[in-house]
Image (tube, rainbow, N blue to C red; front, top):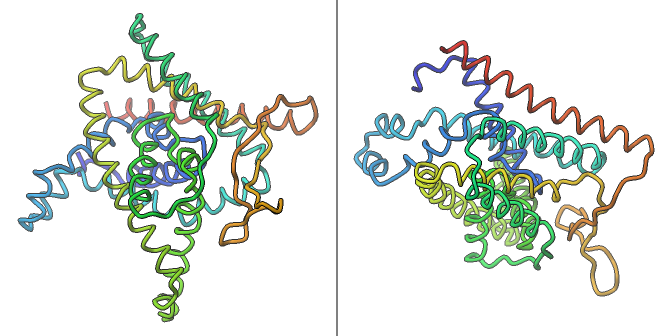
Length: 339
């Protein structure tokens, strides 16, 4: 499977990883949707499912090449390389765009999710009372999650580990936004902003030959939090992939209908027209994170007025839909060329 990948395929895998990493960091958007629309979701789940007892046996017996082939290592490696690069580049750009052009960014994602719903639904023909009920359950859960109130930040390492397990579900379950779940758990800023910035600053210090961070208790705490969060994420990724692989194999239609419902429900989270509510202290001042940015608590959605920026937002929604349709067209063209 891996030896047949051309340089172009490998490059596009890295780009897909960039897209998944960026999507996972944006509240309301799921990296799993990217995998679904780009046509590599089942291979992604299958490859993760191969990280099992046999894989570790090969690894512990020093059979690295066999281990790499068994887990579809080139596919996973290129994909995760793109995700890691995304966290230190594309996601930084997204942070800037969300700060300065929030309406248009949300509009683009809203359009992409609408396109995703069309893409997944158009090939799904197995509609019956069970799949319709599954669809409705997915919608209800998705909408319910979007209206929950966030909790307070908690840096207890056991809780951070659980956050890692839960948050990574967005990569394996399309429509289920891991970053939005972290907002609800109160740890979005701690785990996806502060700890990531601490790692970035640490790499920067090491590159400059400066190791004073070892004596910085706050930096060490952040790195410890990030390490535990990463361990929880890996645990969740492998665990969810085994569960999903079993479910897709035995209950594919019900699972697909539920996923469509999740994605429809997530439209409420990424509704472009919303005001940001920031966390405030008892004296009424806005609380800031370690980088000096306001800490987001929730969003208040509203119906837009007809004015120029609304028309621009609608245009970005259309562009988002066209991006997904373009990915679909590219995927069909690529599959046709391989046949």
